Amino acid sequence: MLAVRGVLIPQDRKEAPYRRMKQEEARLGVEVKELLQHAQEADEEEDRCYGRRQRGDELPRELAFRESRLRKIKETKEALETEAKWEAEDLKIVSFVVTF
Image 1 (tube, rainbow, N blue to C red):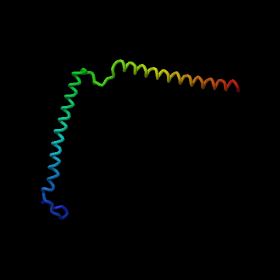
Image 2: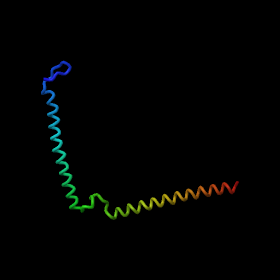
Image 3: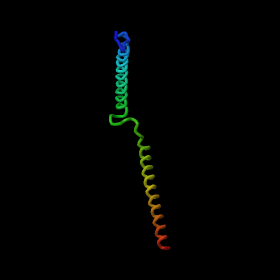
Image 4: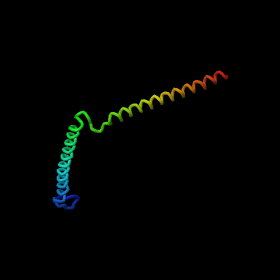
């Protein structure tokens, strides 16, 4: 028996939660080991299918090339548009100065 603030508590009421925690800890430990083993097996299977240096989710070459090309075109287009805006602003400033 354990006395808390004058109330007697049977010792087994204190031990039951601890016992459940130990059981849960053991159960979760087994689950974690199983999940890690499953992940390791999946990694090994992907290595056999795609090679050790590949993740398996890479884009096909054709798509990667086109995506890269599209990105470069967009960047160049944005640069040209920005340059055109600056030139237009320069012309406004020059025309303002000339008309003054």
